[in-house]
Length: 433
Image (tube, rainbow, N blue to C red; front, side):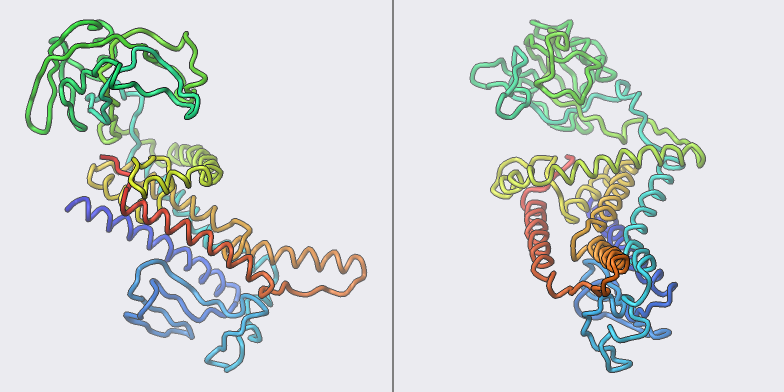
């Protein structure tokens, strides 16, 4: 029930963000005197609508976004204005008639709204909600994440995948986790009679228990269970190795001999104590973290084409790569899991990240995105300026109809991408569990 409620709450947050995006266009257009005639949340059949000061406001049945109608966005607009009976492009308050800087602000206002939402969310997070203190990661319970069925005695690199080579269950020793039939979510309490208070304590204990059969005590739900397991020797990374190092960059000096349990330690942010910076320091943290998020966003854009094949594989039943793109459906599902876990820091961070993504993506200089309209407006302005300097006639406005094939191609690519991500998020979703 909490999970479903979390999905609804997060999806509602995204809908509100999109509605505010459109409100940004609407309010800025009205501020400059442009004629805006409609503002609706949702698509499809109208649930209710009302008119005020020449604007129709309303709510539609399908909550998949929002839209605003600004009259005469281009000189080619042929939509008939019901008030005048003439095409919107002929209206004196048509958007295309206004200076390019005003049109730029109106078209960018949606993205600016997303950026403002992201900054406000992060400021609240750092100032009042608090962020997990990762310096205390070795002081939280050792919770089992994913489990390996075996342990590789040596560190090897898979030259094709450029990652650490997986162990071979047919030839490599069975992992202690497999011997004990551990499950994700189990918490390791003690090994060989020694309490395990964190990840570093686990590493130290396993280093001392190599080649021994030891008693492992763990908690599963409300039950305390135990069993015996043999700890095989393995080559493992030392503590403190830079996590950004790839498997190919690992050197012999980065490795040590020790025992391994055969688990991924699931460090949940909800387990960590929170750091609250207060309003002033929170603003500084917001600025630095936003810069990091922007950098990661552009990196994610560049990585998308290479991750499309893994989306197809996920749809066909292979394990879902957690680094593959997600749709709003997948993001809402993750938001629901974070809500269920009570991980408010990660939930707010995800919401801020999505808003930054939406804001940046909408500024790409391609139609039908807002950035495409901005690029055309400034192209027209620069072209007219150059023509005037050369004493030539003003070449006039760009014919949007001639750009229709490019626009349709972009819409087609985006449509296929959305279809792929939504399908993958339904049939093989990314999950934190």
